[in-house]
Image (cartoon, rainbow, N blue to C red; front, side, top):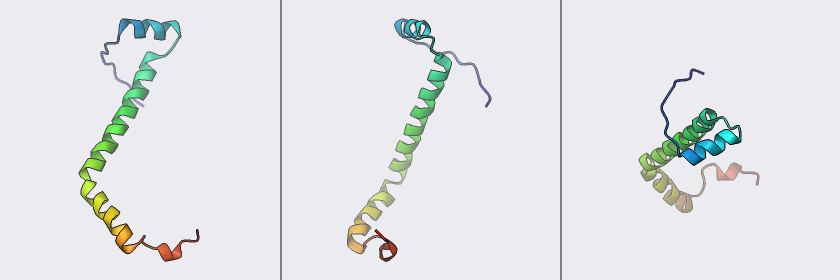
Length: 73
């Protein structure tokens, strides 16, 4: 995986604490940003598809689950 340098500003106490604990701030920031991006992509997808989600939620109680007759539980 290619890596790029970026400038990042942190609270001085946070950076000092991380250094004192031997934490890899680059890897921690990478993980936190990746997780935040995932959460935001999911939020955007739900917002873009809310009409379809609502339509399906209304359809299930009215018509039942698709393929329900094949369920074994």
